[in-house]
Amino acid sequence: MKKANELLNQSAHKLAEKHQQRLRQMTLEALELAEKKPFLNSLRFLLPPPAYAAAALLFISAGFGWLSLQNSSESESQIVAQLPEWLSDEQVPMELLENPDFYQWLAKQPKIPQA
Image (tube, rainbow, N blue to C red):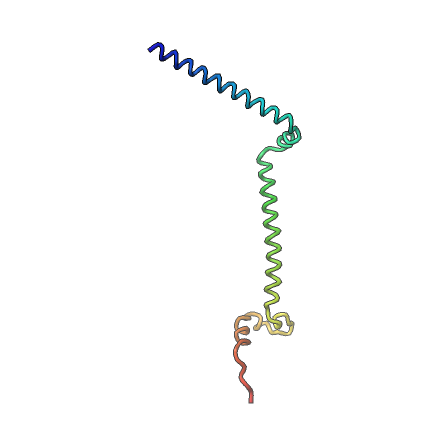
């Protein structure tokens, strides 16, 4: 039983040494990488991470807002182009403007010939 415990302890020490060596190697690689890119590391510490997230959300929402404004101005111009000419006439009575669907329907009806 003692021999089994000794073997387990030795295995545990070897495994711990392997992990320590690997951890040292990773630390050295990280330090070397940090020395190669000092500018990027200095930018990372200018602002806290939530500030970068907020800035990204701001840019994304501004982009979507700009796109929606572009689309709305195009759709408004398309709607205005589809409106009948009599809607832009200032001499048209208010009753006609209050119910344009009826008058559009009426304009599409076949004309009755007058005698």
